[in-house]
Amino acid sequence: MAYLHEKYAAINELPVYDKRSSGKRIINKVLLGTFLGVVKEDGDYYMVETAGADGWVKKKDVTDNKHLKVFYIDVGQGDAILIEIGDKRIIIDGGPNDSLRNYLCGWQYSYLLKQDNPIHIDYVFVSHFDADHYFGLTPIINDNRFSFGSVFHNGIARFSTRRGSRPNLFDEDIGETFIHNNEKYLKTNFNDINDLRNLMNIGGLQTGFKHFAQALDKAFSAGRIKNIQQINSDNQIILHESISGLDFELEILGPIKTYITDAKYFKWFKDSSQTRNGHSIVLKVLYGDISLLFGGDLNSLSENHLLAHYQQNNPFKVDVAKSCHHGSSDFTVDFLKRIQPFSTVISSGDNESYSHPRADALGCAGKYSRGIRPKVYSTELARSVNSGGDILYGMINLRSDGKKFTCHR
Image 1 (cartoon, rainbow, N blue to C red):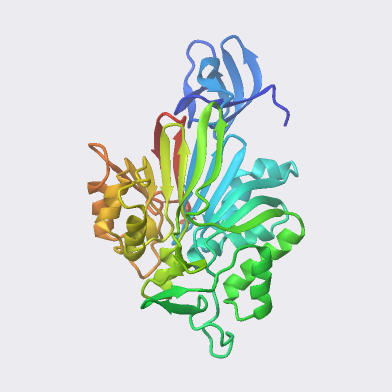
Image 2: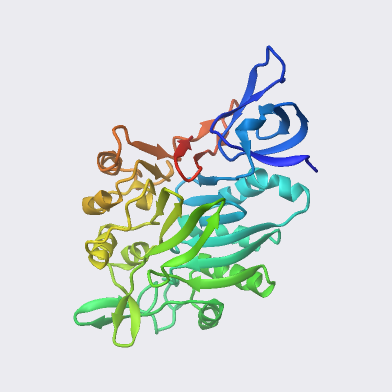
């Protein structure tokens, strides 16, 4: 639909009225940055179409600025985050199922799809290749209605553990390892589409990873993905630009690779699971004065590895942190003390055997936060059930103007 103007809420919980005259009542409230399609204007008011009930809003309470919006989407046991800032869209992980795709197509971008407009995602970050972080990206990448700028990943592939299905080259389900100075390292990793195609030709890929790789290959060949790239702390600043007069930055803090002779390798953390989790992408997002941290499934071994690398420097202190590994007990207090957020978001599911989030993770998330009354949010608790008993997946919804932020469930 063509609107007179396309505006956005300039204040949080912007009141929407049933009429603009005396005796008006509030029929809706929308969050900072929510889209407002102006269909009519009268004096100091706009008549708008928006999320929820449509009605009248005061002109002084709207803006052309879309602000920062972060959606921590409930996908059950897993991670999936959507970030919108200016005209940019960013996805961090995709969860284990179709929940992210259903949310994007059935709600967030349904208005675009109804107009046969494609959905472009500027950046996709796959923190690491565990099912609960990337399986849900495969159906999105396979959907021809989506296109992508860059797909960033940590470079640690997955191979089948079934006897005879993996080449003798690989001694672990994440590839070949070697020993240097009595320390174990992972040698096998991939960077771009050519490396990925080479792995597919060698064979022995884990089924889920193979399907993901095939989806990337098909979308790249069709021109729907422009770039596929491994990233680590060497990449540092992925993006730095001014949006609505404020600095916006995507900074890579991890994984940390170790330099040996003529190349860099992943340090081995106890076993395959600890290694691939521990080398998750660590992404810091900054907008104006507000900072956010996303650390995938970091564990205590990798957190100590990060702390040793940065030593006295502390790039981890942020305003809002996504709890690593769904609130697992496998964390270090020293790392939490470095982060010191005002708010923590835990993304987990209730139908799993790990009992995430753990009591000590919840307690420490509060204890080592800033502020008199620190907030700990849970995607599980954001769920609701309708009258028919159907689970309605929820989210933790962050909004920021670059000077302050609010979180909502």
